[in-house]
Image (cartoon, rainbow, N blue to C red; front, side, top):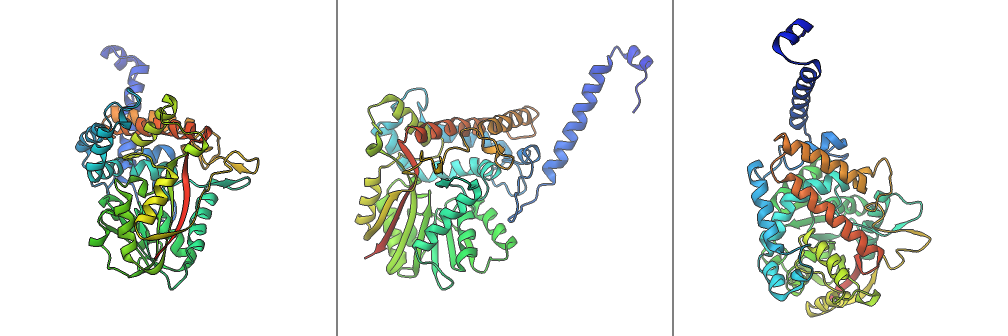
Length: 405
């Protein structure tokens, strides 16, 4: 359409206003088309570029949570963490912890309904951290940790394994392709099962690698006893409200002598974490609220739970013990703002750009109401993770290897 000066003058409109209106209409049309062109990509990145990817957060053809329910889901999740970041120490109270333990199923499922897209958008298909050597890219460090776990468990083509709390299955697919093992992953979240199985099909490994929906607190209802050679978990059982029950289920599913390998999120009293230090408590509670955790454990808590569940602990250590060595890149470095073209979304500036984009899309009613709050929650938690890493009072990579007695 062509607007002449006479028409503009007659209508009382100015050229900039008309241009802005037309531009907005065009932009909304482009965004709408982008949101409808979303395609799952198990080999590459489903969420494409920063802008085109953000259009599909919490609103794509695979989404199981309705657009109009995102805000209510966020409200329900927030109710599990009353006082978080406003009243430091409130999440550490017995009543608060017991509430999250009791409502574990709802809390964790709501959390992953809300954050799975954000995790995949910014992090890829493997939702975890890893110790990182100088000269190593972020993704190289992620795969190295996964391959190390598979190696320590002695996995190979004849191994039958289970992945406890598998997310969308990034680690299990990498491990399957590395070892040739047959792997079944279990996750509480139906959306993750739907997405993960699509990726397995797209990689041509659906016959050897699959996701099923289930509660890792009730593994006896999912897996036959004395069936599997190996079980592994990658930063997953930190969500467990009762690790003895969870680990006992793992133990039951394994053959005698079967191996259980994992990495856990823990606080580090041996490195200086002090529950009576208000700043330490701020960091701990910030990590908990931003990651759907009942409460963070210690290394001793993990080892004790394994032993009570019928395991012999063969090895355990903090894989980030040398986090500030001159030969390592801190595990939290990407979150702290170091810029790389491939990792820009994970940096502080990248997260701010994503948050701004999501805010605009929500304002235009293209993104579901509540999306901005999810983004804000994850941004705040990224800061807590960095603070915990810098002070060495928290690690996401406490490694353990245990054998069924």
